Structure formats: structure tokens, C-alpha cells
Length: 431
Image (cartoon, rainbow, N blue to C red; front, side, top):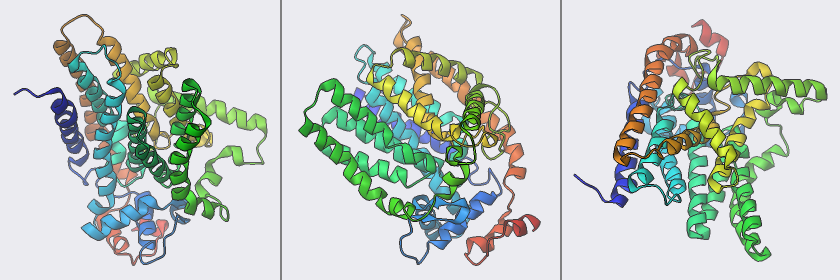
């Protein structure tokens, strides 16, 4: 069976990725992890607290969170009932959709490279999205009830709409970008700074294309007005209250620390956070097989070469875009206290850039002068070996540490899911 180029790239490839990511994320779901973490239990309580109440942009529960994700979680509990499946389903659903979104993001980037053969114009974005979907760092967080895949959904959807605006110059896409970066701001804390990405990239375009003031104003307003509207409730809240999480973790805000101490903390964080990619990873059993590098040796090698390529070609739009995305994603763990690092959850928004850097190495390999069909098969085998390594590590080895990392059994959690259990972590531990 043969497919046209459009059918292959716009229907077949995303459907295959949907199937692959769906199998990885929903295999033995939600039984692995079998139990529930204390954090998930707190999230349930937070979601239940929003029921039958006026809209609340921020909750002090669970150490403090913007509430957008928890309204989604509450809706899942109402639809599917008081089950662990309901608690984890939003994260898993967004986890599957993210893979399709990032495929279309990469497709828009790669299709600008006219020198690529037709098979590689679809094949390279497919392999990049496949790499993203099969990174244990990614699918681990999509399999239980944390906010990581949700914030990535808003960021990737926002990035996709921004790229569509650049391609078609339709202001509806830019307004949509403003809405989505506003929703990202209202989700997991690292999403608060994502709006910097389209804003800075637009400023580069203003300077490069020498736009007039009227056109600059129109584009900025199309992005910023919806962003301001969607972030207004949360920002109004912050004019009267502190953000608990940032106040507790952001060491630059600590007035008792000297500049020298803060500089020392930054240096320690740079060493720990950069090291977690290749040497010593996150020690939290919910985030990682404790201490294992976040990238396997093959991905690490492809990442390093791809990162170097991006630095060398930083003046090009796509390379500048993902270098900035990487910098924004790596910033949250760099600015938290060193004893909190390495922390793969706080750095989860670097993963689209990591997949893009890996893709740059694949593009470099694709220049080898051999039949492009055979070359694609070779590249697919290579990234498939990485995928097998990652999936095996998760289901065979990392799953062994889950019983100690996810502490709450179903029978302990059920009254809590029903909304009539006063949260007491110490009591839960003793049950």
C-alpha cells in the first residue's frame, strides 16, 4: 500500500505516533505505579476542595499550586468516579496528545529544509517525535497524576500555533498563542516563564524584518492581550498573596543569603543539573530510577552533537528557537536550592528541545550519500534501540522502586477519593 506525501505526513505518521505513545503510557495503566504517592493524594484533596466553590486561581494546599490542572483533575474524577484511573487519566491523555503536537511542531520546522528528500521530510520529524515519546524521562511523568504532561500540552500547542502564524501570517494563530501561553502560565510553575519564548522570537523577527511600528504593535497586542486576560486572575491573587512554592524554593528571593552564597548555589546547580543528563540523575524514585542518568548513552551522544550544531547555527530561526526553549526549561532547577537537585520534574520542559537536538544529529547522519529509504530504516533501528532500552529500564528496573516511592494503597486512598477524609500525611503513613 502506498500513500501520498500529505496522507503519509498528516495522517499516517501522527496516527502511528498516537498508537506508540498510547501503548507505552497506557500499558498496565494505572497499575504501574501500583500505589499512589503522597503528592497525588494531596492533589486529590486540592481538586476536591474546588468543588462547589467560586473559581479559585490558586490554592495554598499541596504546598501551593495554580489550579487549572486541578479543575481538569476534578472533571476526570466526576466523569470516571473515585478511582486511581480517574486521578491519572488527565496526565496520561495529555501525554499521548503531546507526542502528536510535537510531531507537527517538528514537521513545520523541518519542512523549511527544501534539500531533504520527501521521505526524510516526514521521516525526520517522525523520528524526533518518536524519540520524545520513548524517553523514560517523558513517559514516566505521563503515567501518574502530576502536572508535567499538561504544561507541555499548553507549551507545545502554543508553539505550534506560533509557528503556524509565522507560516500563514494569520492573526488568529497569534491570538491562540497568547491564550495558550496564558494557560501555560496557569499550570505547573515552570510554565510561568514560557511566554518569554514567543515574545523574544517575535522581537527577533521585528529586528530582522525591519517591521514598522504599526505592524509591531498589532502583533504584540494580538499576543499579549489574550495572555494578560488569561493570567489576570492569578496575577491579581499574587498582588495580595505570595506564591508558596516560589517563596520556599527560589533562593534568589532569600534576603538572608549573600551574593557570594547565591553564586555558590548557582555553581552547584549548574554542575548537578548538567550532570543529571549524563551521569547522576534524579534520586527521587517517582521521577527516575534513583541516580540513573536521565539520558541513555545513545541519546546522550546524539544530544551533545545536536546541541553543538545548534550553538554553531544559532542565527537560524529554528536553532535559536530551541536553544531559547532549552534555556527557559533548564532555568527552574538552576534557581532552586542545590539540595533539591538534580530534579528532573522541574526541568521537564527541556524535553522538546532535547528531542530537537537529537534530531539535529539525525539530520547530520541523513547527509550520508546512500539510498534515503535505507538510511531512514537505519535511523529508525537506532532510535528504536534507544526506545527498547528506555522502556525496559522503566518496566523492569524503575518499577522495582515504586513500592517505596508510591506509599498509599488503594484501600487507604478510597475514603480520600470520596472527599470525606481529612488529609493527614502522618496518619496515612501509619495505616
